Amino acid sequence: MPYVRTAEGLSRKSLNVQDVMNKIQSEDIRFIDLQFTDVPGKLQHVTVPSHTIDADAWTKGIPKLDGSSIRGFTGISESDMLLKPDPNTFVVIPWSDPSKKYARVLCSINWGMGHPVHKGGPLAKDPRGIAQKAEEFLKESGYGYSIWGPELEFFVFDGVTWDVNTPAKGQSYSIRSKEAAWKPGGPATEQGCGKGGINVPIRHKEGYFPTTPQDTLMDFRNDATTILEDDFGIMVDAHHHEVATAGQCEINMMYDTLVNQADSAQSFKYVIKNVAHQKGMVATFMPKPLVGDNGSGMHCHQSIWKDGNNIFYDETDEHSELSQTARYYIGGIMAHTRALACIVAPTTNSYKRLVPGFEAPIYIAWSRSNRSANVRVPINIKGNPKAKRIEFRCPDTTANPYLAFPAMLCAGLDGIKNKIDCGNPVDENIYTLSEDRKRELNIKSLPRDLAEAADALESDHDFLKPVFDGDLLETILEFARDAHFDVASRTHPHEFQLYFDA
Figure 1 (cartoon, rainbow, N blue to C red):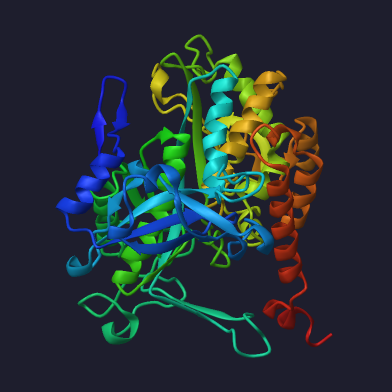
Figure 2: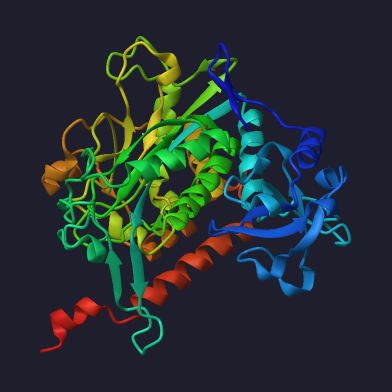
């Protein structure tokens, strides 16, 4: 899926069914990996020999899925599902064995043809189907398309272990990293260090932009970027080490439309994890694996376009070149932030990241350039309508992009429809404001934990109804509450430090 440059910017070359069938033959593709996404956001797959797929399979679907075995899909009494592959996501996997070469293709989920009601129609709880429905809703609302630029942060460790086989059941863990602040240099054979036998560790919160050799992951990011661009057709804007110690990274993808970018985000995670595995390391998109250091987020840049014009841009606005429509969109995002949290920060670990002191956006406010607000308007270059966008900073990389992007879009469109006022920008450092000053500015906080986020979503979800199926929302709430209880009811190791001698 290579990109080409046009007068308007970047666009993908489309692959049709015949293109893919020809490629399977010409490149001697032995297997096709059919990949799809469950409700929590995990990429799943089933692999079939390429000779089992004919041209009709791309339109009729492939009956290889028991939906009752996939988290969030359906019950055992109606489990027959169809995988409907999208030829434009066809990629020959570069690390596959040449003698057993395989390609992957992303799939949407349909009901089986024999279902008495749905008869092969789309599964309403299929995350990729939700993203497709969101693009349709945007057009029905009178607009053209939306542009998305998520910033996916992640960690690459040398090794991770945790306790699963004792009565503690996962209450201890160990992380190894040649960059780690807690494990300064040592013999190369023991520490995985450089040729000289010693590495200079990266101190907590000092990992932003150090050069090699302190940044030990530049070659890793170069390799991942090469595969993303050359094989997956995902153009990269830049990559760098992030703020935290022990291998925090960021690789920025170029902007794209909603479904394409959600596909790219899932492909991104797939590539990162596989490249790390090949190098004897392990990558994680867990928001807060380290205590006392910055977590990993997924800041989401977004804008709406109509008739080739960015409707978020207004050159006459002196503060941030932002249109009134964009301000209403921000108003919708802010009004529904607490409910959005359950979808864009969907794990208990998400709320370990959303705490004061680590550059995390815990306050509901908007600003330009100010990273203490949860909605930011970048103003790097003046007078550039193509670059005008808003940045929502609450999401993290455990979010399902097929659900997170549509949820944000629905909130913003609700703001436009109902002319929700976003209020005045807060250009002060919110972290340092007194409680009285925050009340004066009407600055509210994000939910403190996943249970509170679930309560917010339960009480505020009407804005999602044009796109999100009601059963899907119930499933999201159920997963959130179960996860919160599972963690909240478990003894924490630090409680021994606090209370053992009580």
